[in-house]
Image (tube, rainbow, N blue to C red; front, side, top):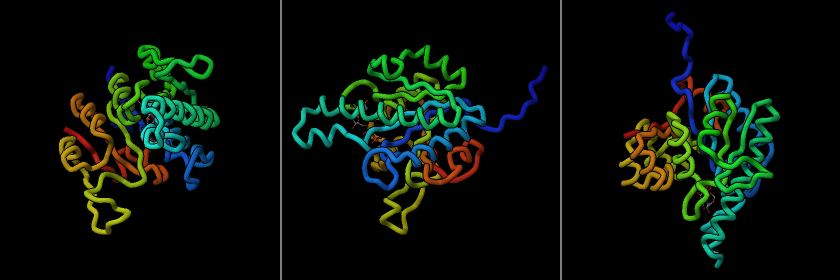
Length: 243
Ligand code: UDP
């Protein structure tokens, strides 16, 4: 029998990467619950389309390793503190999603069994198949990395079809659109151009990992209500980073 059910979205499984700063609202530090709730609502609207969702949330709203090492702290210790910050953000997002009746799992690269699940790849895949949102916490579990790289790594491991990088602007620009009125947005840009022109989509190791595994990156505005869901339906403006 031919399956004639409509396919409203181009993606079956995606990775959503957001920075920790996206959760702090106008506060300048930490977590702003209404902001977390608003992002959870964006995730729900995509979940409602039947898309399987992985998430990685940074920790920059609480602590960044480089910040700690600049203040004289040993880099690896500072990075572990940064990784722990991402666990707090992941738990906040889990609570906000559960308030919307979305089943989630927080899955940590650093085992902390009383708090969340340890990362076991096959188990995480099973959660996704059961339509649970998987929030990958504690980065890669290694210092000297970022959560952009963690998102790219997990997206590859989970066989995501794309990484959706939610930012404050609707794509990648040739210069900062907040500072330059003539900044031009790319509809499409190659991984190599991003690296050569230092376009600041993600850090270089994340871009290289995406490029080497042919994983597209969609850069879009998380501040645009309905933006995430709209792009999955083929609407809205964004930049597609590709090979
Ligand atoms: N971090 C790390 N290894 C990882 C991921 C993150 O050591 O695999 C640390 C690092 O110190 C980083 C911090 O966690 O500064 C928070 O992550 P990130 O800076 O990527 O957060 P974002 O900028 O996305 O909020």
